[in-house]
Image (tube, rainbow, N blue to C red; front, top):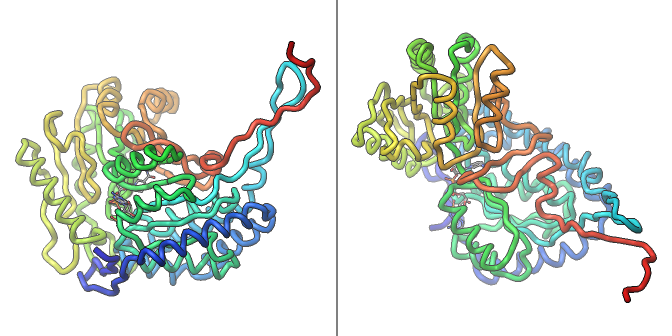
Length: 460
Ligand code: NAP
């Protein structure tokens, strides 16, 4: 199927884009490769000037970018503006720090001297999801362009206008043609790109299924990959938590981006003695959210990204209930145009219920009550995913203890401030491998080359 831009608030088709022809794809790859041969020899300040210019342009046109995201995938407009601002910050961050992150590092061998150099891989394929249509692109463009790589990007098929706008941003900022190339391609074409010898690395952010197939294909080609996949993060409420502070975060943690965030709080695990009060107050707070046009600043509950996403979520909820879960709230589509889902709370989810393991990518709360802290940790860890999680307690030392005991790539104590340009983002288990953002993010696709010097006695 071609790329389709559909407004999820109305269901109206806005634009379609055909997949690239084989000849167009070949031209794009050839250009990315020839650009790499020049780009790799540019200085860090030259790269930084372009990446920083892109950051400035983005910051100067926040509303234009934000409206595009809201139009194509239904993100509420204030969230979309914040995403664009943050994307600009990420680009600026790598423009500022990229050179320092990739400086040679000295080693201390027994004889002579040695250091590690960082050199770019070449052309990278990045496959990206729709849920943060600009932030995801900034997360790969900033570091990898600063490292001297060039990137070809397959964005999700429901956000072609965002994809095209980001490519234009880089061109407008002065990037040579081929440094950042948007590819409107099918899954099969993405496989061909992975197989192409000019491609030297593959980064994917998306679902576990996509991760399995893309990582397998990269593996067959012995190409390095990084995988940023789904999550089912625990939100652990201990008995000493301050609910006045917890409830707004619980609402935000589940409902931000209409619940379509990889590291959203998805499993709410409350210790018995506070569970009833937490649940009652959480439910009450969720009931105040009002569905509406995401372009309207007053809206507090936006649509899901597509009709398919809504149907998939409804099916998951129906299955969960059929398998014994209790529906405490919602569970249906909202009777209005667009792909709106009622805010839903499920409880009594037993381990043999698919809902116990699956990711709910939308406004669905899975609620669990447990005996104590140890049981909360055990339940949090009883997951195929390992992206993030949070713990809520007035006792900081206790919060640190729980954070250390939960097996994920990221843990948050009394906050859900998930992302910062400086902080490495990523998970373990089915949530993937590798990290984006921060110093770690720029190191993923550079050759760490050892150089040793010294006059040693000749071998006998
Ligand atoms: P998705 O269906 O896996 O799609 C993600 C991207 O992969 C899209 O560009 C999609 O293209 C492409 N894709 C999927 N299957 C493919 C295949 N077999 N071959 C080639 N390309 C393929 O995921 P999504 O529904 O858009 O995004 C939601 C998922 O992403 C959730 O699980 C979420 O948790 C995860 N996510 C993770 C992070 C993180 O950093 N860990 C961040 C954001 C989202 P098409 O659109 O053309 O199918």
